[in-house]
Length: 327
Image (cartoon, rainbow, N blue to C red):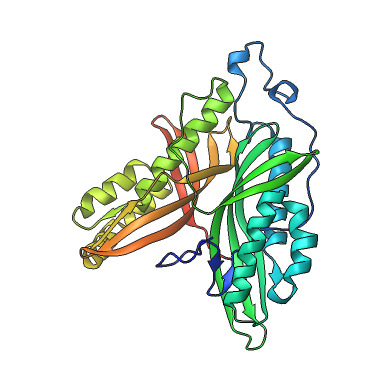
């Protein structure tokens, strides 16, 4: 996994010599849940059964989210001097056999990179949301605060990493089958779902993808257009904030000579969705290609928490915060 910064570090080695931490503790037991036994989702028309139950099945969403957070904080919180026991006792309890082998190998490489020094790593979930949920599979977007300490010197590093966790249900327990640090996703397909609640959820996620990409995009050669495009995807109070800071931001953008363009669609997951009130909170993970005065600066991870509000013009961003480690 990679920590947010100006460059792109090793996929698994973040914070200098540490590996990204992904786990907490305990597995979640979940009875098989399908649209037919989730209140409010049953329909006489099989064509309208939701494909994705994320957020629509609140109990199932909470269960898989708990399992994912537990796995992240438990698996990737460890001491480099106690990896064998950690792999045997902790990792095996939270991930599938294939994933356990891959994670174990990555942690071994991290320990070797530390040159025999005792490194302790602590990881906590900063934010997480379920993007996909089925009867026996799920996908969870996670933002992980990492804290690494070298025991002999007390040197400490902190940072934020992101991963999409693919989970499978084995013997009524959710286990992580893959830690996807590439965040490989596509644009939300609005033609997949027929169920009204599922279509509304996907519409807000698609709008959040668009709004997040627009807010993260910069063009020093067109500063006025950059601000106009940001305003177009916003509603108050965010729209007013953009307008009030417009002149100052234009000056900064031109002086920096920055061009920022999302490399791919954002990985998104809603953590709150009030369909009746027309409000939602969405997590986004983007990779931004950056140049300054024509010089390539590489890709920069950007992590956002968007407040989204339904308006006559569709779902628009009402607030935006960058996701950062709290400690």
